[in-house]
Length: 256
Length: 246
Image (cartoon, rainbow over all chains, first blue to last red):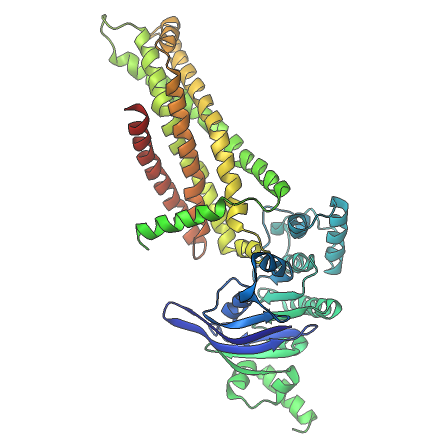
């Protein structure tokens, strides 16, 4: 579980996060949505320690990340898996080398043990026969799957994804969404996804946080999102006619 | 950002670079890769340039010494001194600053803008130590060897230029090479090379690591890194010469 309390972060005179508090539970896909510039990426990067918040606290299963000793911080880092927006695969390394890298760096497993684990996670993300290909030889969807494999190879407790569907066709995007949800449930990981993709919100959003101008404007489940009358959420999520119709159909069906 | 801030940030970067590698095996693999990328792949250009520069130095010296009172062996002597003292260490290092410096900045800069460095940091890896230390070790240990090769080939180029042009005899040239040999000058040259190698690895790494933006920013950082490395090589060359030879 990740508990965030009154998180604030700014750059120069610009305050980006203006006191965000929320809780992310294990085994659930938690989605952060909001317009561009709302502070989603800064929030996500603050959670994983790439940005240092000015105030507030982030507790990982009760452990405040500001109180970590060097060894605890090292241990905590190994409990984190991150899927970056552009996959961030090491382009000079093959798929296998990318995925095995954290194992080589942080474990004392034998080569065959590491290869077994790599093949297992590549199999888990439906990416067989690609071990010796370079990232540049893969499609966007395959790169995302390699990034997910690398993120889960160390059996993380927390998985963070920054726009995992950006640049993917709708069909591949659904495959990636379902994969992340399956992995989250299977390994009881606390997953936090930063997304613009409303399909993802509808498909896998078990808890949704809507950020607006650095403030948590709304939070709830995807079902609650259908019912909400929060103007900012309605304007953002149901901006397309298709989603307006979907929402209307849902409300009619549930007689609300 | 002003120059003082850049200098401070550069020293803070070095503090992170010179840490114990997190995993010896990975460091060793990275080191071998960098020796190949930054060292072995530079041998060709250094040998080619040294050979022709050596030839030009010998020809220029011969053409400017047409007095009967000056012994012909002075051509070999002057060529040797010029090559060992300046052309091999300084000129070749400036060539390497262009070739290797732009490679280092663009490769690290691209890793920065494609979030590969962030990926390393999230995993709990000291990215500066992981990326820059193997480069520093590879250049500092390999470039003295490279520059020594450059010296040898430069002197050979001078000899061949004389033999082919007929401007001076090969025998007198070799006699000049052997005259007044001072081993300290080789040491001076290699000390300079060590300092230049350090700059060639760290200054472009600094420019690449702290790049912000996209591909244009990486291109600009590469240009800046070559310019600054060259400037620092020239200044260091002056300071070391002042300290070691005067």
